[in-house]
Image (tube, rainbow, N blue to C red; front, side, top):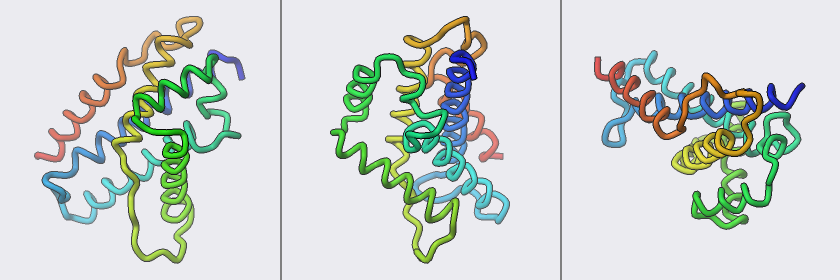
Length: 170
């Protein structure tokens, strides 16, 4: 696969992750789901699961073809800035990867013996994916591969969150 294609696909995964996170968060008010009907509970859970799956492709699966290390040219600079933006040490980021993998492996990919689900801290997912997306656009774009992409991760997230809130409030 050409670098342009890989960059574009990583950007798309970032947007998928942020979109699903925004829709997931839009379904909650004051710590409770807005709608308790099975359709809405299932849809909201699916938004969470897809967000985690996409995040893991970008950050947790180093051998995967969409991992950030496959597309970032200056990996040292990127990783240092990522840790700074997320306000984490490298060990804390590794522990977060572990949380995301555990949720993915124990509750999405397989339904293991754990009886209680503890979703990971999604604020960190938003920060890290937003940083990756904005970094790609600012530092890695070639051959106008992001010509039709949202110009900014935060604005994209907020746009999608407004859509979600509109739907959930009907």
